[in-house]
Image (cartoon, rainbow, N blue to C red; front, side, top):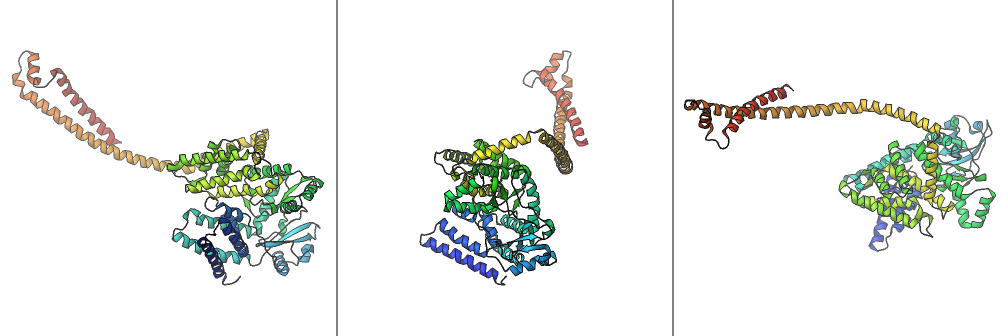
Length: 557
């Protein structure tokens, strides 16, 4: 890796932005023109920059649709490196010559990418045909240097508050997670082992990993003879009749394959919470008798259970045309939603969903007009308009489901993807209502209830105690203030009572044998019934006594 890599990258991007500025000044700028120049730049820089472009393609809420669509097509294709370096890496990782492990090893790679290249081989011990995936020697160092340069750029952008809605810090975190997984092939081997077990229940095949030969820089997996979906798409575009004959000869039904693909992916996401994160046509393989296989498990996803539950409800609501409910669920998955604009945002989302539903019912509507990814794009546009930031999980999962459209649009160009989703949800309901599933859910529910009680005890009760102490302190302060007020009120009542009593004593010599005359003499100057004023005087004394007791109670508390 050149020591001037950072300067080279900086110059390439500077030249790119100068070209875009020139296009703007001459009135020739379009988003398509920008995308046409950005893709070769990222492809040529390779490695980290391809992964960055793929992550940026998720930001359809902040970037033009044309750019996001083209960035999503970025693939890590590259020229193969020297086969001697592959042999050297294998011998360093296994600690023995290649001939000891493999009875046959094809030095020329049959596939290459920016991360590594693949060789065909046969294991000596079992004579099993395998694929040996070997990492490029300079990948780790290249990632480290490019990541350091990218952190510097993000630091400058953040310092000047440039495009804060792009969430550059979160982008860096996502990129580091992706690079960590894809630069250590043990992650892919583990993903492959776990997903292969799950996919078997979906009637989807996956290559078997040979874990004894899997290391950070190489992975050995079963070779699957099949045709990639990308090769089939190329054949169909070149000669549709020949492609149709090939389907018939291999007993492949496009509608059944499409249903199996979407049902499997949704099941991976919503039921197993471990899913293949990059099901583009190059990672889907068509086999004889209608069998389907997945390859390249370097990108596997797993999300928070609560997020998946809400997202599943949103998708189900879209399929059932309950658009108001779908809008509420989508907003619940966003990072921040301004409460002042909430009714307006919700209304715009509902209108957009209804417009998508109307377009999808048109007689000659294309697959992409019917696809849920179209509604997802419109959703992101509305969120961007109101400066609402969708979570990265929402963007990533939307892109994962949308990536499958490249395959489905060829298998069922006139199909309605909503019907495929509806079939999955019916199948899911049937699975979850089986006795074994109900018993399992009851056991899980009981365990989760116990966990909830434990969480309340460990997490919530200390917080409640602290809040109780705070409230108790506030109550104590309030009690003190009230007691002071009541004390002065009591003193006031006693003073008034004393003045009235002194007045009575001062007039005592005017008393005669007639009680009525006495009362009139004492209280005749007061308006109203004199008896009532006498009662009021007694009431003041009783009130003073009651306030005295209240003050004692408050002070004792």
